[in-house]
Length: 171
Image (cartoon, rainbow, N blue to C red):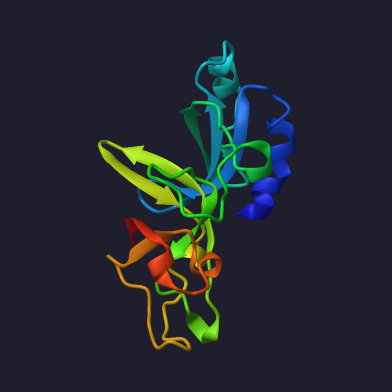
């Protein structure tokens, strides 16, 4: 899948209306190539019509979206520290992770990457290894379970002491 994505991304991204590509799944769980198109672009319709319906047998799924924006986070440039405890609502792109991520004697953390809202429910997105990669008992004999706290900042930034962090979501 990713190899197919790599064959089209450079060409598609030459169009200013295309904001990005990704490997995704459709509603039935089948892998697709996702293309993110700027909903406000004057020629968005033309770009969508010109995109292929599939590439090498893999369906192309178009998503109209707002432009992606990075959040300010450099503490030396006046932004919020990405490793310090923040006052809610937290800025995304900050340190965080599963509250019990102490596998194999190491405290861990990662990046709380982005915020998605579906209806009235908000979700924090991150990589699998940040939220739920402990699916077998590790050094702390604990596995990630639905409902476990997601904290900010991550354990690695609070000297492995969950009391130095705050719960910002649940797994």
